[in-house]
Length: 308
Ligand code: 13P
Ligand code: SF4
Image 1 (cartoon, rainbow, N blue to C red):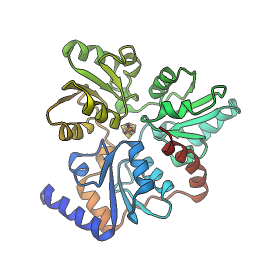
Image 2: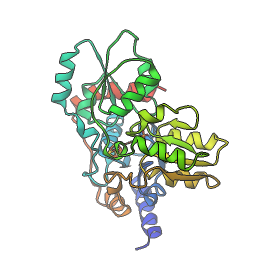
Image 3: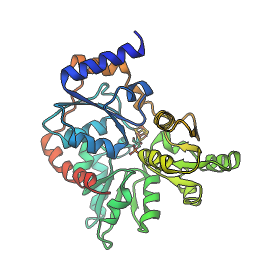
Image 4: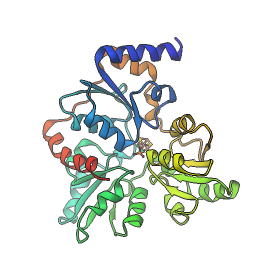
């Protein structure tokens, strides 16, 4: 079966089932192309909260589908592969968070959206890379903050907010693999190119030293917005390579190359067109969140969706 006929089947099933297909910027190109909305974590959360269909099929990783379910408890949320997890979200469990909170009982907990629903339920605020600064700025200056789970995003948040945070030492294996040496190499190789860096990258601290000149630290959607309005036409991109599909598709006159072509998230790539078709056809796999956990997590997620 060709890609086009599979895509036709997916669209027909989505219509029949009144389902909205949401896809993250790191999804396979053929999955992005069949989605109703493609975006970053913040944009997808907002779409999930607003979408009109009775069903959301989430082409992304599990914590994203959980977030959609928490924001839309009356809708059915499906994920085409339940194994699509996230190594960063797995870097902290609830017992570890409770022990950390016990050491800083007065502190406010800010969790990156890349966390399980159970972690969000123990958090005061959630944020994404798109609004982390705005979320931190909204917290009274005298409050101590526990920031989790991504160390590199936390270091960047400290820098842009000017506040000292307590940081969890988690990392995303894909972004941590984009190293400080990569920044130096790219700047030397292509001095005229603009460098777009996701704050989860292991090179983000290094990139901060150049930030504002030709280096820009941005969420995935922030990269698209930046490139769209930039007068430059050559960019090197430090994040998961899936974003290149949208950058090339939406800005065909500009050139984008990955800083590290091996930055591939195997969890994101577990969602294939076949699995998406089967998900709609067989009504699988339904994502559920215990109501007691969802109610607590919702407060932190709603603050995230409303901020920035
Ligand atoms: P954003 O899409 O919010 O930039 O996040 C990237 C990411 O790693 C999601 O897993
Ligand atoms: Fe998680 Fe990293 Fe994959 Fe994003 S790229 S889903 S943070 S493992």
